[in-house]
Image: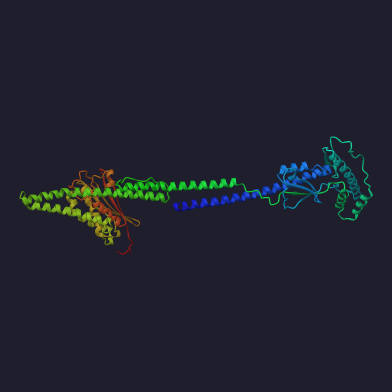
Length: 544
């Protein structure tokens, strides 16, 4: 992935993660606390109202209610104000705790009715239900008076509803002044019976009986309560800051670590390249930078290493070229100078043979200089080519004819294997220069009785031109240096074999300029094969 995209992606990821995490946590925390607050509030209200109703159900009076209110306020943490429907204050948790009463909450008050809910068995006849209601009214009045008396006497009272829903009072001890009701109460109070009979004409018979029950027991039951819970303008519970701060700190830490890792990943290779570049500037051409990965920084490191290798190789080539040129020119020029000084001083007679030798040596030096110029032009891409349609078979025949006399003089057989014409678009003169160099080298490397073969083959759109000899061959360790300038297989760099040591370098550059390749295979004691590969042209191709 691109380094720029990695940086952008990392920053966007951190920003998005920070925003999403903070927003999600805040929303989740707020929703959870709101839900918890609502649920807790409902549970607290339900507990408060349930305990107060149970107290009124069991005691049939609100006397002694204060301890229960104090306990509920302490357990729930709520401010509780209990009053009757007529706004007669019964208990206030603030006053009970010794503090000034605070303004009550604006929330609607909760109404608590301690009277029991009358129960009726399923499929009961109306007359039976009426009798059951009258009995429940009488029984509740008796139990209510009894429970209220017990409560005023300070006795612990418990109540259990019977099958009609009316509380049955029980206690461990009974004071003398409180007599437990005995026997079946007489339900036939005229007023009660009259109110119950009035329900016969109503469609909701059971509902009417329950309403009559509540009305007839109202004088014995404690009044309904109006309960206010909470304090006015009480601030809502604040969001818990610890989780939000923890996530924010984690995101900040992740951003810091990401920035540190990113800066380290960027600055470490940059620092290494800075040191290496300083070393190159001071002449240490062997300095390289460690490279890993595939991003832009790694590509920059590889490009820097390639540049350093190219500079080092160029410097070595320049030193080697300077040494090679000095070596190639020193001895012949020294000879020329010595003979010229001897001729000037009259020590040596200027014979025709001596003058011919000096002239031949001057021509050899001129050929070296010309080859250097051709190679420089070829490597600079400034060598001129005149491309036309060239038949490679004719080119090989011409090369064989040109070297026939040299082959006969060396006792080497020169053969041609070209079954048919093969056309290419090329500079004929430059290709003859390549073939001539290869043939000349092959003849010099082949002992008398050997063979040099010029072969031509075509495979698809490619033409293969080969020069094979049965000479002494080239060692495998010398093959990589074969196309180097001024390189000779002869370790003594003798000149008796001829050549300037630049021919193969020039040949490779010419073939490369023709979008071709040149390769060599050799076996010591068997021979050497040079193969030139070029692209062919169709029958209708025009010369250019």
